[in-house]
Image (cartoon, rainbow, N blue to C red; front, side, top):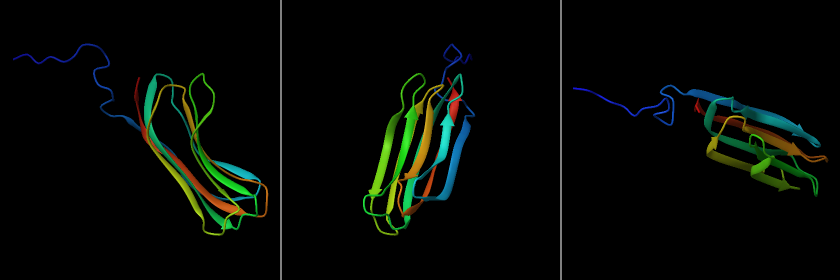
Length: 140
């Protein structure tokens, strides 16, 4: 009996043993006028990736009237301009307000970059930010 397989070096969309990638999860306080990157991942040359990301804000000191806090997922394709894939904002809210996003199964190619950021605008308020990136990387 003869067993045959498709010809070529790329017979399956994923490696048999793909690499797990991750950045974060991280948590920290952000006072007014500060920002933090909680996860950052760039797909290496000759690789592809399927990743998910999440970010959140919990207001720890009430935001002043007009003061903003936001979590966002920034995607920069290889050779392209920055794009916002997810954006959650809270303006002048009370202590304990939760704002979050979850994004699953983003398909990325070599050179694509993904970042999870939390920023708090200038003012008396503060927030606890968190976020991270997790997924699998495989041959291109």
